Image 1 (cartoon, rainbow over the protein chains, first blue to last red):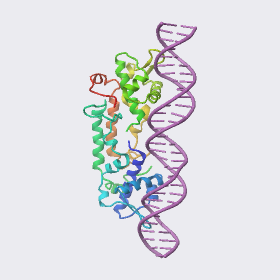
Image 2: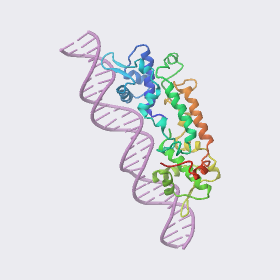
Image 3: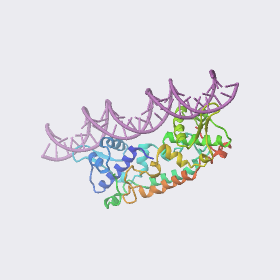
Image 4: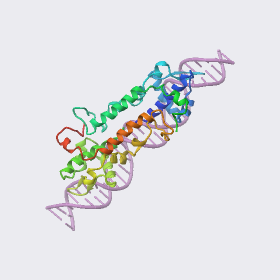
Length: 143
Length: 143
DNA sequence: TGAATAAAAGAGAAAAAACTCTTTTATTAA
DNA sequence: TTAATAAAAGAGTTTTTTCTCTTTTATTCA
């Protein structure tokens, strides 16, 4: 469904969101431990998200990653699109480049619903909305 | 969503299904042209499906691939499961190994619906059911 | 029976994705 | 103003996926 990079990106950002709500910046090592992922790999991914403004960062002592108000309200779709492109939102299930209403692949019509549901889910879910449930151990980001 | 191999597999099998309805066997070169895919690559994939009985084949002159009655009625889910495993049917959206009702990832509950819809679609769609629409150029398998 | 045909099998090469390690740059605070 | 810290950047390696080429085996039919 999503690439590994994208899975890590979503988990990282949700992890950072939770910490940010308490005004805490968090280092890459802690994020890696918090979501059980390869440290250097997610470093690259977060650098990318940072450059694109989906996550904030600060260098130096007491630095780390955090999310500003705006980023906390961003939909997960933004993260997915940045890491994986919009294949998942618009691509053909069978890989046809020109699949469309006019020239549909065999799965086109049925698949549209599923893709749309997925799009809406990702578009209507924000990065910051899981903090409370994570605090209460009703949701998990690792294992 | 699906791997390239799986996309080609589905397109190949649907292509062969259409020909099989007319009792025609079809060679790998024709399939490759018919679905616009790399010939040797799909050869491997079809060999695998053949070993597992999801497609039939015959060597030698006037040989080729075809589908028997049973295979024509098989759900697309069988093809997907054979090529890509059942990650897509049961895997966690965020890549957690132990994601479950009891220990859900942040997307678990919402995602379940989408995954279930996808499962049902693939389970209720048979390999052979597109032939008529393909004949009428209402559906397409390449480009 | 033997030449032609077509899938099966073997053995890769190329490209992409996943992951690692090292060096550099920016920032803080003592 | 310097030592420590932490992200950014650069430069890989490893693994997986995608794709290719060659040889072998089975089958047909002339």
